[in-house]
Image: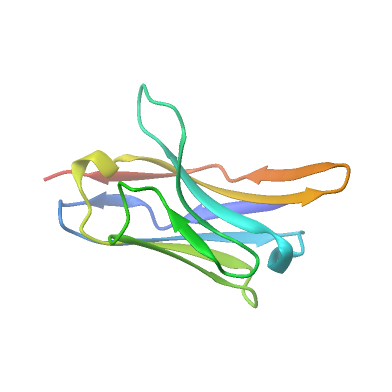
Length: 119
């Protein structure tokens, strides 16, 4: 059974930093695109950052210049470094792994980790 386990969330003051990690198991991690999504109370889940199997990255406009996504294919882990955090970054952050196959899409989610930005 595929598992994605997020860690690194918590409470941080505005302007602070956190690094989220997502460890994957039972998938060929290196061929999957990996993404970080977030969902704030009363809002839809949104894409925060994405990294392809070839390590091409893209970001939501709201986090560009503040967040960095990276991957370690040896450790089967994807990271989200979050700097200059704002109260509006408060949300549950989810890790996603996806792979487009000829007959469909493999799509897996972690359980989420809470990030709260507050003074």
